[in-house]
Length: 220
Image (tube, rainbow, N blue to C red; front, side, top):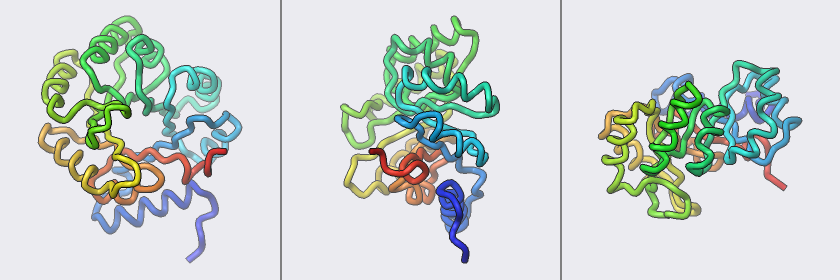
């Protein structure tokens, strides 16, 4: 069996292999290339290979590099995967096509106002604090039903749930927990899994995986 030529091909081959084992369609898993801290010249090769979904952690960093790239590749989709401050909601809505870090009532209010002002609605994943790690952001599990009610009442497009499991702990139970929460609340999307654990995440229902190191290499 020939080795895939590029990291992107290798990741796609792994996604296909895992989906076959899980009896899922590879097309049901969206690969988000996490381009945070990487300059445009490192991103363009992936765009040239056909990658169209990218993830950034910070609004300000994304503002500095993506408008020009979007002019060249207008069919790409930009995901905000880092924590979002309420005062940056309007900037985020103008730039991003999907937000993965909606995690509190104040941000629901800020996003709803931004949607009205900017004139576009952006699908949002509600981030859940599955590992009880407040420093990472995420809605506490006990508060999730109320937050989902607020999101729906504000008519924010609800894409699903997102989580970041604790580091250096087996992630499978946390992915399974998010999958159960999504099913319990009638949600299709599950944004979970990164370079080191996306295979496990796919086995446990991930619909969106956020992969950086496996595509760009280790950050210096």
